[in-house]
Length: 144
Image (cartoon, rainbow, N blue to C red):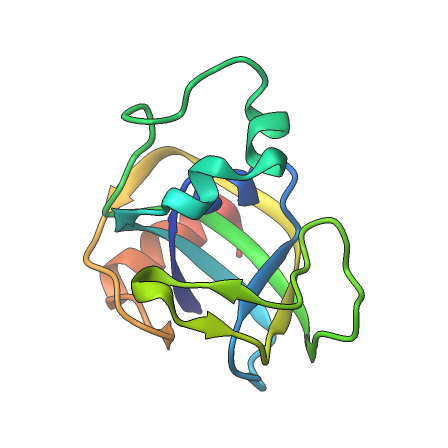
């Protein structure tokens, strides 16, 4: 099993209707993917109309778990953006520091399985492998 660190509130949204994760590189991996909520809050995500629609009238600031694995999804496809995968698929975005990213890859996510209790864990950049004890916990809880 692999894992992906995603900033909040985007990580929360994966378990509330977000079925595309936008990245900048293609990966050959397909299969169960643990979603780790990173320690950094995304201001861009906080301003997203899609996040606001998914949250309803609730404010998510300060209410979401960070620094933990929230659940597992199935990564079923990865492809370059071609103006597809709306509304969650993006064609470009501006990251922290003001750098615009134009070569976007869409990670197609299905079958979200949130954990009843998040598992505290340190994340990493890119696609990473969680420690063996955490993989065992995830497999037991999510039948991944």
